[in-house]
Image 1 (tube, one colour):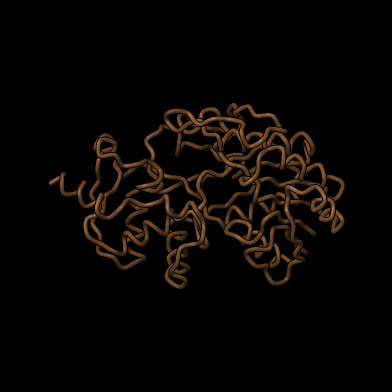
Image 2: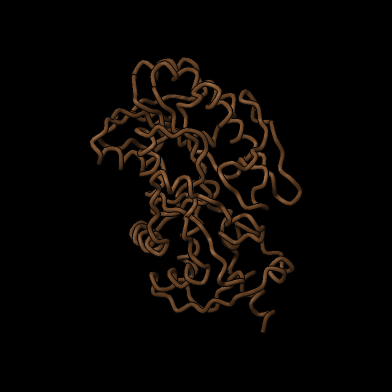
Length: 337
């Protein structure tokens, strides 16, 4: 197999490249060249918003498939330009999207057939809006437009992967590393009740393997990628405490109290959100197609091994968004006594 990975240097893209090379595939990567290139790939550097760069890239083909891991940084019209330029050089397009493209996210349970946000394939970066309660999001509209662009050009030769939350070694957002550091610090840990609520993050390595499987698959359309078994928040935190050797004691606080205290959902307590549909994502079609998700406790263990060895945040603007300040957490915990 011969594939082109748009991106290929960070987190999911890097795992896709590494896994493809282990399969013995020939890999071309296309990015700006700022993060270094993996050994064994054919690196092509350029700007995906440049028509000349895209046409130059197409000359390095043909490929069996393009795997696009970097579309979240670009509006639909730039995705449309990329698929148009590369269509003659690639048989198939594997597009990494998001569950945020659904109208009902995160309020309603989702299936692959749930209605999508409406965004034209040639929309610019101004299209869309974020609702007063944080949903829908402008990001969701933009990603829906990106999907529309891919489908307009590739039709049944495209598969659209819609993960919710991806965790694992190399994570650049900082959700799991923050919980690991908080568990390591120990003491009383502010934790979002109910403790038995199930969460469905997927491991980056499992997403990478599934994306590569789609290169040789005949599937098309959208596929939700969420852990089919999940893990309770209680067991998630217990795994973090165990792996880090901490002596933390979770204090389970009801959502109403957390909201009253001004705790920001999704960021100050990463992975916590009160909306009914956020962890009700049906991934059965992907599972039937071969998605295999390792236990989330294994993801926690391996992320801690990576984090403990590296010990530094990834240089990404979203990192600073995650985690409650120690002083704010202590103030809330003190008010509960």
